[in-house]
Length: 172
Image (cartoon, rainbow, N blue to C red; front, side):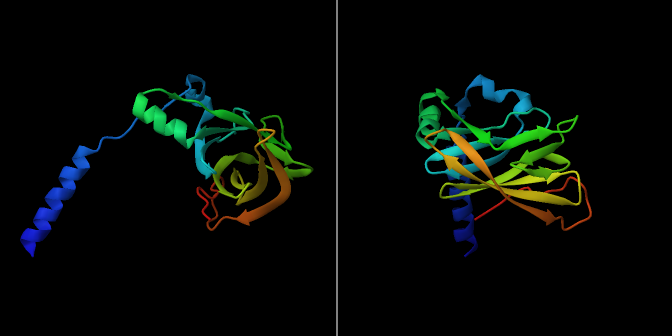
């Protein structure tokens, strides 16, 4: 039994060494440090890159088609992206530290942290410099290349009494 386990371990090590990680090239404009991508999500056949959108007001989500990612890995080419504007959002406060989603004020907003998509609905968790975070909902509109945020906002208490500690991931 020990020899079987040893052989299996050796085969696993050989298989792991045979695979090298693929490098995916994206447009240089997306690699700028101010984007600080804090979330990834999948929608249809696209990977969504979601900037934290805190200190640098971006108000966009960038989408890369899965086929373009595969082609980039195989051909060492740049994977093109599409920009989807986030609608119904307005930054407020002298330090841009609050948001209006429609008419709802989200105080002490500190950035997008996570996202998950179901059909054409996207949910974002937003960090806040308070003892709670926000969960907001939007609808992805492929025709207008936008994400329309809805006023369905939840204030979710943090498990621990720590400011600026929102939910770092979401899952369906």
